[in-house]
Length: 228
Image (cartoon, rainbow, N blue to C red):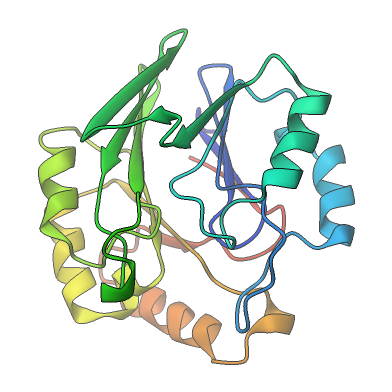
């Protein structure tokens, strides 16, 4: 079994388990967006019982769009686990880079552009999780192939890159992935089967099957866990 465990909640929400720490990123949201999925009441009940979603060390958000963040669900999580640390863009995460450490795990927040010109002013961060057991990039909704992401990662060797699925379905995204050179790629921000009105799942599955490196995995089912 790998030293890194990644568990999906819905959309772009994950729990990262590494070095005995649990880091939630964009895990709690309940606003339904057509063509995508959210944490439904049924899934929320299952989530509160799932091993990955117990006793988080940190609850983090890349940005506060409603398909990534719910104030109410976050408050419920803190009512359950008040010792967790909240890391939210603008409070306390600010600046071009921001760091927080939990034992030998460091979270480095990287200011990155959000996908879409209409979101140019969104306060948005990717996250590098750095530890002796591996380095993980979570891109959030970073613009596909944005050079700022590669610049922010720099010389960090990535064991896992967790990215929105268009990074593999679009040609410019695939070219950018060559530069990141991550050992493993997880693709998320995909709808569950019942919400897939645009055929994104088939498109993503096709892209994975054609990816010559063979190191890409779809993170697309509720409470799916990948050990790396």
